[in-house]
Length: 229
Image 1 (cartoon, rainbow, N blue to C red):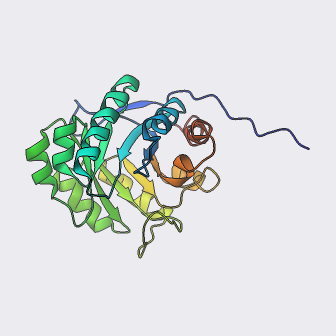
Image 2 (image 1 turned 180 degrees about the horizontal axis):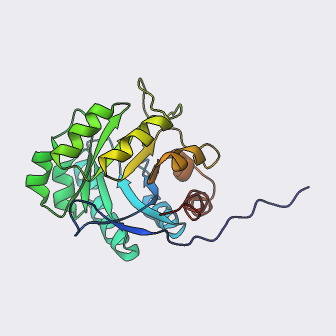
């Protein structure tokens, strides 16, 4: 039997300042997105951060508001320990109440201006742009802090009707904001996305469904260690 695959040790990638608001500092790399609800949420998130996650999104589509607030506050404290921003999926009010650093907005969620007014100038506001450069341009003009594209590959996390391509990432570089790639991404298929300009690989299942969450996070983090700034 062959030797087990070696997992590279994580080394923090280059930290970059937001081009439009210097107070915001983002670190390229793994954008881990939780798959709750789950009883071991804090443990697996800690493992993902120990493995090199540089951004975390709390994603829980249930309506268990009390539990979601408790978990979001606990994750905010954990993320501060690792100096990693916590982003809340879809819910501006939960982001405000939990002490998270920001919110991620889809096309059916609050507008960037509404989120900015509620969360403040220092909040990180990300926007899903799917397969649309025009939507990305509008989000950038509205004051978004990062632009997310996808799905790039088939995924079981959500129903997908629109797919993005690496060429879209290359075109979006001209907008001057950090770019996020999402949708069915694994360490094996992610290389061309990083090469095309993805600053973040947003991952749910390939991290949080892995038998060894820490090792899975390290494999994604390693993809950014040789990229030129």
